[in-house]
Length: 175
Image (cartoon, rainbow, N blue to C red; front, side, top):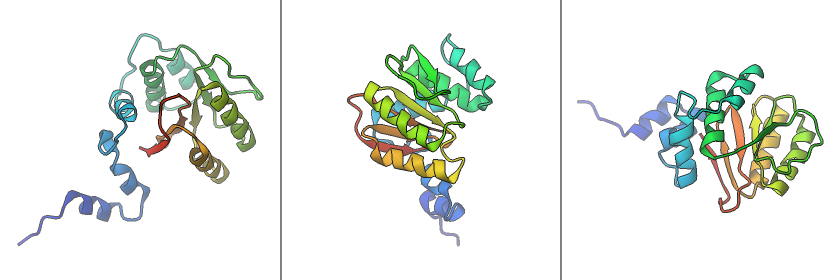
């Protein structure tokens, strides 16, 4: 006679001790209690094709050697949030006045990342940090930025989103 175990016990047994077990909870939006983040998961992260007619960000991300999947997600995020301009943080220091989305490449140092985060908070710019887990120092800095961040943040493993939009509560989601 076999005993059927609940799905949560089976998942945690399969992924025991790994990061995957923690991420299963938010798969496909399940367990996300923020309407904003739920809509991001369902309408942005789960899409396999670029939505909308504007593909300039998608093309530029591909030229910068970002995977097709991540480039599609970021292009769809750009369209979903209704952003009208973006900027790559290639040379610092920079002013983000009037910029709605700033994308921080892998080459940005930890010190530059901290300065850029302060500027993004001041100008209410959404910050997208590519490859937040590439190096130990960068991973530690990104976790610190999330803990100090006043608004909603989403870690999608390939990039970290720090939303500096008024009205979004302080919460963090790991997808």
